[in-house]
Image 1 (cartoon, rainbow, N blue to C red):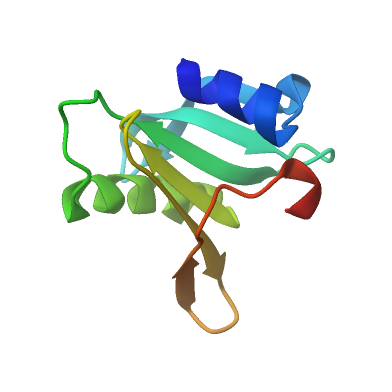
Image 2 (image 1 turned 180 degrees about the horizontal axis):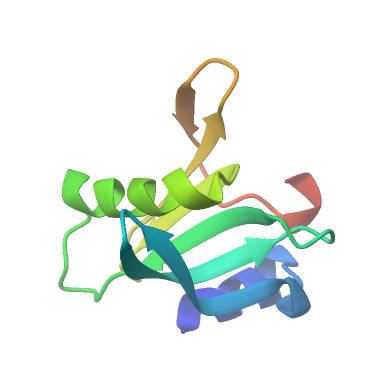
Length: 109
């Protein structure tokens, strides 16, 4: 994935803390997150979902990644189709989220 390379090479994300095709159990069915970034204690920190360039990023795509987050409860969600990238930070205390202007550097997470 080009986006994983971008996170590694340009944003300083450690490859050792990233896993692809991570399985989650959701309402009795098995789903797969494209990429999960973990903290050093191996708790999930971020979910990244990829779509093909011809796939428009819609509410349906965000609904999908949000369902995965019901299980993993991460701080950040990223959706990318290679042309458009969206990153939001989850605020569990206020039950809200904020879309960020850019993908954060790893050191700023």
